[in-house]
Length: 372
Ligand code: NAD
Ligand code: IPM
Ligand code: MN
Image (cartoon, rainbow, N blue to C red; front, top):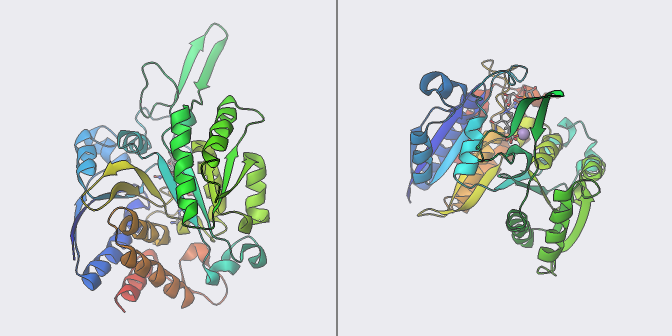
């Protein structure tokens, strides 16, 4: 029995639709385990730009910092418009991640046994897949090395005597690499004790440094198997033999791309949750930001087609990592598995014999399963 405050940032497109279902499931947990969750809802993304002139206000950021955890939906308009706007909704993510120092982004990929046939990959390849991508989240190309550094302004387009040019810089410090590698090795100790460090050391200087630091950190964990893999080969191995991975650790952009690819192992973008963690402590654990890996999906927004499971599993990660409520987190995972086992699916997981339900119905089924 505890009291917890959660800042909720539903955002744009399907963000509010899936976040609403995550809250429904959290409320079911509150009722079953007699907890009190107090939600502080704030604007983020396009909605915040329209109402407050920026993707997330300093006041909302301060509220995030004071809460026990942050539940985030998705931000962004149509991806083909993204380049033209001056203030981008995605800046909210950079401000949150950099501002609260959430440098470690955990993205677990564990296909449910009843969803093996829903994936575009053969079930016999998927069988037994259980991997975790540890994505570095506050460095690399997303935060170009402008002087002075401008959070959320990762690139620059400028006029030169040769014409217009654009620049993005990929900078990593030894300390940034070391701390994310340590996260990977520590979590691997609680899993299958294998770390794959993914880089592009045949081309990039930042990857050469990454590899040196990774080797040094790996030597401190002799009980954990360790290998290097080039990112292009990793993209191939992920769908050739996903069971060969346990923990994958990689830099920001590689982790972003590889996890969208990996989401298809689980059947859909709508299935992968994430936790973004730093070092800030709260009364109950570590402050964290929890969000599905998918975006605002403008193509399906407002149609009840969004799969809320990634958001619901993100809420489970919130319970686990920020509130220290592991049984409750497991209860959500079990409720998701049971609902899928019973044959309920959202549109993205449509297959023969399944019962197709909408976003809200999926949330209600999972909440009901939590209470059973
Ligand atoms: P997207 O992840 O929004 O959608 C990619 C595809 O997956 C679409 O076809 C979409 O319909 C489908 N999809 C995504 N989530 C789904 C769900 N829960 N259920 C069913 N289908 C789902 O990526 P995009 O279309 O490239 O980007 C749209 C916008 O979202 C862009 O503005 C982008 O910047 C933003 N974005 C935000 C976040 C975030 O807030 N963390 C993450 C990724 C993209
Ligand atoms: C994600 C998203 C974001 C990222 C975008 C929207 C900035 O794709 O969280 O995976 O690239 O980090
Ligand atoms: Mn992404």
